Length: 172
Image (tube, rainbow, N blue to C red; front, side):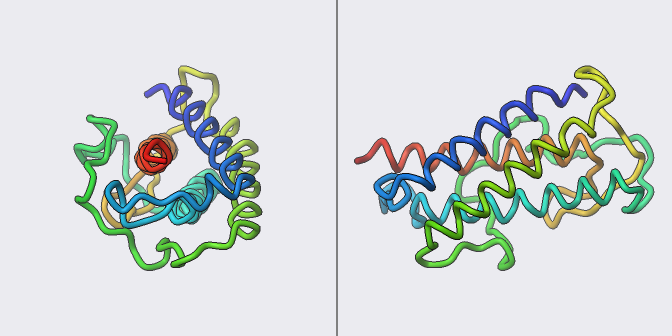
C-alpha cells in the first residue's frame, strides 16, 4: 500500500484547517442545513481525532500495540475511501465543544500539523514502501490498524469533515 498520496492529502487538509482557524468569519461558519456542527466544531473534532491517530502511529513505530500479522483492515471505508455521512457517531473524547475557542483550536492545529509533518517521513522506507510493523492498535470502529492503515484512516476521516466544512462555507 502506497501511503504517500494519503499522507500528502492529510498534510494539505491540516494546513487548510490551520488557515481556517486564523479567519474568524470562516471559523464561525455555520449552516444547519448542512451540519449540526459549525466549521469550528468540525475543526476541533478533526484535530482531536488526528492527534489520537498520530499517537497510535507513534506507539506502533516504537514497538507497541498488539501483534496482528500481515493482514490489513477489512472495513469498507478503506476500500471506498469515504465515510458515509450521518452513519457514525464520534466518541465523547473527540467531541467538540459547543463553541470552540479559535485560539485554542489554532494552537492545536499547529501542534497536530507539526506532529504529522515530523512523523510521516518515519512511516515509509520510501514512497512505495510503507512500514508495516505487524502490530496494531484498535480503533473503536475500524478494527485493529497498523501504521499505513492509521495514515489512510486519518486522511479519509479528515477529508470527510473538511468536505462538510467546505459545504458549510459554500452556503454563505
